[in-house]
Structure formats: C-alpha cells, structure tokens
Length: 353
Ligand code: NAD
Image (cartoon, rainbow, N blue to C red):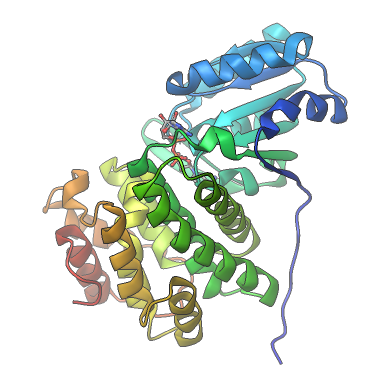
C-alpha cells in the first residue's frame, strides 16, 4: 500500500480553439468589469486584439512583462492598476506575462485570468519568482494562483519551433520530477506520465510542421498536465539546478531546463528506479535519461550549457551553489557527482558519461 496526501487547488480551465473569445464571459463570471490586459512587448498586437474584443470590460493594457518578473516592472503595473481602478488582470503570454499577473495579485489580491501561449506551466501554479537587484526569490502562496486558465490552441500556433521545443522540454521537466517527488501520489503521477506522453509525441510533429493543429493541441494539453504536477508536489535536484544556473549566469529559462533535464534524470536514476520506468515508457524509450537526451536532439534544441552562453569557469561556482541548501532528492546530493553532472551538461555529453 502507498499512503499519500493529495491537495487539488481550485482553478477553472477552459481548453479549445478560439477560446480566447470567451475572456469577456469569464471577466463577468468573476464579477469584474475593468480588466487590465498584460503582455510582453513582442505580443502587444495579440494583447491589443484581445483588449479590443473586451470592449468596455477592458480598463487598459500594459505591455512590458519581462522574464524573471523584475519588481520595478511590477511596481509600474500596480501603479497603473490603481490609476485605472482595474478589478482583474488578463495575462496573455508565456511564463513571463503570467508572472507579472501573479506579482500584481500578490500585492492587490486582484483575480487573474491567464491565456497561456507557451508550455511553461506557470498558469497552473501557486508559485511566484520575483527578481530584485539581480536576486530571484521564489515563494509559494495561494494568493498568486490564477482563478481561470483559458487555453486557446489558436494562440499557440505562432510559438516558433525553437521555443516550442525548449518550452515543451521545460514542461516535461515538471512531470519528470513529479514522478520521483518526495510527496508523489498516484493522481499526480498519472497526470505526469500522460503529460510526458502527450508532449513527447507532439513536439517532433510541431517542429516538423508548425501548423499541425492536432499536435499543437496535444502539446498544450500535455503542458497543462505538467504545470498541474509542478503545483501539486515538491520539486528536486533538476529544478534546483535550473534556478541556480538561470539566476547566477543569466541563462534563458526554458533552454536551461532543456539542457539540464537528461543529466539530472541520469543522476536520479539509481534513487528512483520506478519513476525511471514510467518516464521511459511515456517517452517510448528504453532509458529515461537517454530518451530525454535524444528527444532534445531530435527537436534541434540546445544540448549544452556552453551553447547558452555559460563560461567553463562557472562550473565550480555552479556546483557550490547547487550543493548549498539542496532540495530533497531521491539520490543523495554529492559534490563530485553534481560537478560531473554540470560538466557533462556544460559540454553537451551524453547523460551519465
Ligand atoms: P516567456 O514568457 O518569456 O516567453 C518567451 C518569448 O516568447 C517572449 O518574447 C514571448 O512574448 C514570446 N511568446 C510567447 N508565446 C508566444 C507565441 N505563442 N507566439 C509567439 N511568441 C510567443 O517564456 P516562458 O518560458 O514561457 O516563461 C519563462 C518565465 O516563466 C521565467 O521567468 C520562469 O521563471 C517563469 N516560470 C514560472 C513558473 C511558476 O510556476 N512560477 C513556471 C514556469 C516558468
């Protein structure tokens, strides 16, 4: 018998094509009438279109969402919320825009509608990371859990193949770690396995044919499952390494996850054999770590930290940071092993080399 605890957080999920046309219904359903629409500068046109479709329900727009949620950007957005008297936010975009909506909610308690356009999974979590003076601090609080997620496959069609690949691997990382989490449970594990399966079969199709609607839909479904896993259980070595590397060397978020995942999985193979079997089965591979490595290669995603701009003299510092205050991990965290892991990831060697 496996004893377990499982908490499901309240969130309303709408999934389909053209679903972003229902944002107005959801604003009203929340009892709101003055939405602030958020986006990055790159997605301004989509956000403006959404704002227009909201008509009088839209109080205004803010297009400066930035990766890693810098607090100075949040302060400007909160000032605009107050000036306009906005009573909810609509975040259209990836993890960066969702992060801004969460940061506003943290300070104002405004309800959030998120329309995700990447596979990062932030929309499904009560987790927020904010950056101040170059330091990123992450916390978990239900104050930032979005009330409504509207997955619109049509808005996903424009995600470029390279971002599709790295964002998809970022999502898979949530599910991989959920399968060997300290507080793993049967329900989350089912979602994790299904999430990996959906992404592993759809990502290669999207990279080859970005207009394939069925594959886009499958990937977005998988991303929702993986994001839900990230929220439901604790994460381990892989997420710790990515936070450390991303924060200390200013490496891009999804790409760092993509490079590190096969190596963290190889490191954890001995400590989590049952999880490895389920990951390998979901990937349709013999071995979990090698399967992830070859999936990345097949997607044309980056496979070395060096290619992301990290310098060789950072390997020692990264090792020191990774072994300091480690998260719980199925394989004990040992300095030599972690150094080897980072060295392999830096050079893009096969995992476990
Ligand atoms: P992102 O949101 O920064 O998006 C990357 C770029 O792609 C942006 O320029 C964006 O405008 C553009 N883009 C997004 N969707 C597009 C689309 N469909 N078509 C064309 N362009 C599109 O990247 P991300 O990887 O989604 O998010 C990364 C951030 O999210 C990081 O700050 C990370 O820490 C955070 N994150 C947080 C959580 C959490 O639970 N708190 C989980 C995952 C990621």
